[in-house]
Amino acid sequence: MVANYATGQRRFDSYGTEAAALEAANPLARQLSAQDVLAASLTNEQAADYAAAIQALTPFNVALPAAATTLAECLKLVQDLPSLRAAATCYAARRLAELLPPARTAVGFRGWGGLSWHQPSGRSITRGA
Image 1 (cartoon, rainbow, N blue to C red):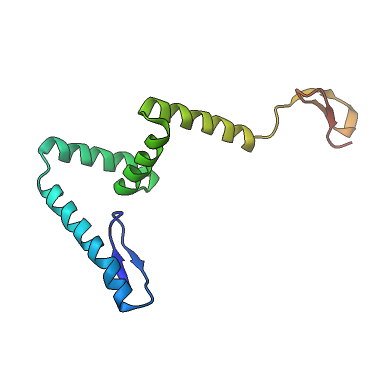
Image 2 (cartoon, rainbow, N blue to C red):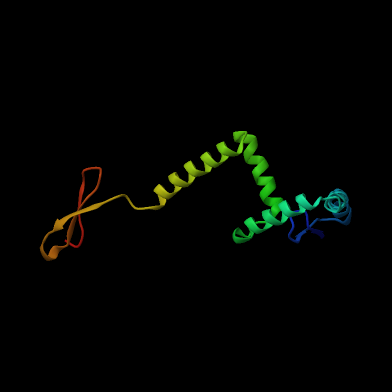
């Protein structure tokens, strides 16, 4: 079992043999060491940027390395941040439309049987009749 902190949160990776665990641990240790060296050489401005990024991600419970990796993968698809935002906005609007019931308007009360509804498709639905 190897303790993996690469994403900023502890995760235990299991391996079938000790040799496989050592093979996976060596590159991970080199990566973490390189990250420590980079962190020690941050300027004040870079440290402030890091703190601001952490604060922005905290409400979403997302670690900065995971967010940066996901952002890089998305930028490979759309090339720039404005395009990524437009794609996310389009996705959110489409997803919201799928989650909400179809738009309906009440046309009138039909006695004690219930309301009659008219959908944009032209169909009428009677509730409670």
